[in-house]
Length: 161
Image 1: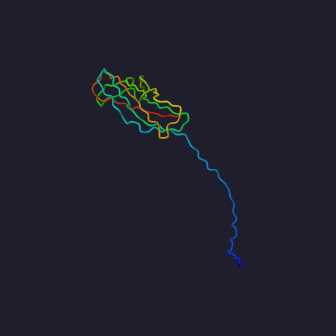
Image 2: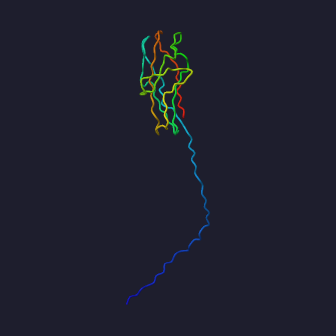
Image 3: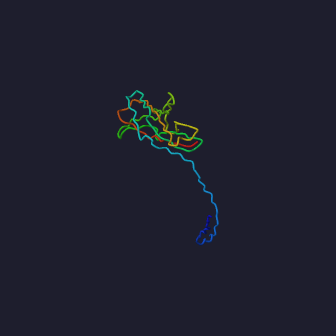
């Protein structure tokens, strides 16, 4: 004969359930368009004799970063009509003697101007996530001027399309 016992488990007091109320909210993230021109070469030098043409491939490099789905363009424009030498040197080189092209774009250079920007890159897509590395080549026709380093400032502008 088997004896089977019946056991009762005792549980402590059951707490009363707290009253609750729920709600929801929507999280919105508004992403704005942006474009950044960075890592622009600070300066470059073309060297040659009067009456010659000096060329420097990859003279200027930069990185452009944008999330604009329509893409962007990069332009460059001189700030003065001439390249000027050191104090006391009255010789100048016309800005029209300086030419630019996008590296790898072919043999044609485009004349620089202080009144009209030169387009050096256009693309109809956003940049790569880390930015697009771009490069420009420069060429100058050196006139009969005295030995010196002739300067001007070139303004680069990256703009969304």
